[in-house]
Length: 207
Length: 207
Image (tube, rainbow over the protein chains, first blue to last red):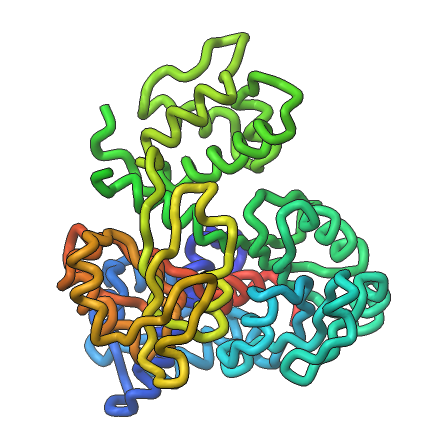
């Protein structure tokens, strides 16, 4: 049942989960509907029902979705039953901001290792973690069976880092470096580049 | 010719531009092809040709695209002829990292105003900008005709900030706050939430 689901569907599940958590935190109701979710998220209710139907029957016509139950189902589907330990490469200002970000752990991830190659940064403590030298990258990744890494290095360093991460067993990479990275099949790479986001919006603006 | 182009096509143009810039910086050739671009970006050459064909004829069968020319065309299409001034709301660690990020200006954007409401932050200098109090938000946005803002506040503050920004004339918002924001038609909102990116990848990982 969960085979060959389009990546774009998978990409919406975290958005649904985030919105359900918000409703849960508001705490004034037990159920919601595809209509209500869709209105909040700017997604059609039919799309939401279709997306969720890939994974089973989570709601009933008329009564909608039980918020707590749907959250638990989405957490299982997205493999968020445990907190994933994450390695961070790059201890510059962005890397430091990520290391201090308190939004990861409640949602399933925890940065537990930080690497950099600058002598002025290695050995420093950031949010109770000691910045490790890049030479220790491979051993640390493989010895701790780390599956997920975040890259916050300059663009020129990122592809080599990806190659080393993948060679050490990393399966998923979130990159803040502003370039496309290549990796073997089966390795997942996501990108965060504020400028491409701004540029896709400036298209619509009058200059 | 440039009407009703799907947003997903617009979203790929900055990726093409970024890759073309990389080729330009490498400096060892004048032309490229949809095949070469596609190989680097993991996008089919047919898709690239189709995307670009929305905007005109940029290459010739056999000779491909002139890199410099295509860059200039994409810059025009995306309205990057001038540097867009940007207001940043939130001077925490992420906001500070964004304020120091040197990747904006070469690609068409410049953070020129920073706002926060914390007494310990207002008046501080970050990358030669003085953090302004939030009370000055509306006047600053409207007096300077600022069109683009970046939100790096906690989630709970973000919707109110969007409302105030839109009321002052902002047309495009890049939000780092982990929630869906609502805005009137015609206002463009992009999101950057590392956790939704990590969650869409953890789906594919064995837990």
